[in-house]
Image (cartoon, rainbow, N blue to C red):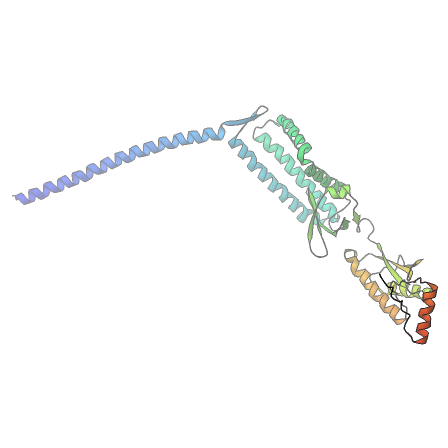
Length: 349
């Protein structure tokens, strides 16, 4: 027989386990209800998000522009720009580098290829996204208005960049002067050109500057350039000796070409010196023309010093006009060692 205490224990255990089971069933039911509500809420949110993504925001021609289509076209444009730049690098570094083409032509071909890839990729992307290309006439009109209002400088630089690529007045590696800028062309882009000076400073110049202003290209065409070194000597100098010494200086410099030969010109009778000019030709040191001039000046100074040829500095003779009577008194006082006569003070009332 089971004692009363055992019956109480069994009853309590039954009640406890029954409560636990009932609680589990209740929790499961509530969880299922929450999950069902969560699914319904997610479905509703998904429908709202889908409506936001695909709801037409604007209409271009026969095409409707939604948020989804906008981001689709934007991502496609980013990919096309990346592919255009990658095609330029591959074409320039792996294909054109192996050809005998000039470096400037290689960069022009690679840049033009990049423009073609981006342009056609952009058009294909718009058509793939379902945008009516005939509506681009409206966009072109808007761009035209923008150019007329404030984008003319950007358009001018871009068109000038295309002209530079085709006409090639300058190319990569040329030594140029534009205004106060003097340096080597290291990069030609759509909007601007980068020039690096002898001080290793990169200067960005708008492409329109090369079309609308005068540009000195030291490397264009023939690489031979004539340098002029002005020299002044004293009036007592032997002019033929000066000519011979200047030609010797040119002949002894390894950066001066023998053909065309160097020359000396007697320019004029200056105020303080006889003015000469040494003219030499060189195909080297075009990027550092100041170095060649410095070498020649050092050599000229040494030559003239060896042959006692004076390089004069500007001189001026001053002539004073004085009253003849005062001048005679000054001379008489100087000869007699006496002080010059002083004026008697004038009595004042």
